[in-house]
Length: 413
Image (cartoon, rainbow, N blue to C red):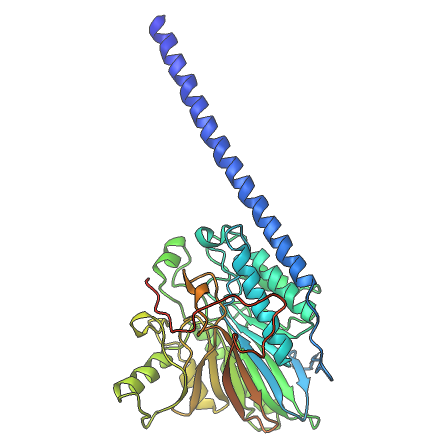
């Protein structure tokens, strides 16, 4: 009997210890969740304090018969590309989220773009850096910001917007952005039979009804595979074959709509095409001098070991663009320290300036890579692009800018 009583006593102790551990973990999770909600509320209140962008005559898009949002103007059309904003919306990222929102708002308020295109990674729901798995809170903060500013915007999905372990899928976030709550968001889900979420086009027409520029937004997917391990390994996916077919068919349809004249177009997505690496390698291997195929405009590769993190398989979009003769330029993000723009075989390949304060550990202390990309489209469809660094005096944020080093930063990862 004494031995049995001892075993029962030990069992009770084990249960008490396990219960205590579970209780402590549950309490810690509740505290983290509560702190995250407080942080989201704080940044939401900050957004509400911002003034809307003051336009003299803001262009307002309408849904055309072809099903796409269309702006009408005979003047220049100004696009701002933002990328890799990385809002965590968790208890670990409250301050950095505020910095990112502050930076985005001040640049938009100064530049007054007709359209903002975000080439992926609005959200960064990585638990050990953000402190949450809730990617919808990140999406909500950014969408709320754009509504408060009163600026039209078009997002593309990046690999971090919907991690495999995030609460919400691409389809969920796509539906969320496209809801009536966010009237300035021009995202469209795209055809259900085509892979990805958010394959769509925004057109710019003149008053004569001619398409002067088509802005193609595509989902460059996330990782090869869909599990947590795939995200850790970071083997990146690519634009899929049926998306390339969709692109070709849409350009042909727009050509027919345009009276047989192929419209000029620009395309935006997150993960760079393999041609970005091919072009840069050819340029560098020629002593950083132009070649028969490559004309350098500006920028550099700042990632460690000259990294250009594209898929390992060519998606064929570049070749399709060459064949059709519509797309003059591709714009991507993904590699936060790469910001070059080159012409490769007649098509401009451009990295956008990133915003990121969170994803690259230590990057908040550096500023040479942070800003926006301005794309000025002329009435004839030609375009010019330039980088605008956030730390210029012309950008006056609601809250003071943080102090940063303007030296080039090489990450330690």
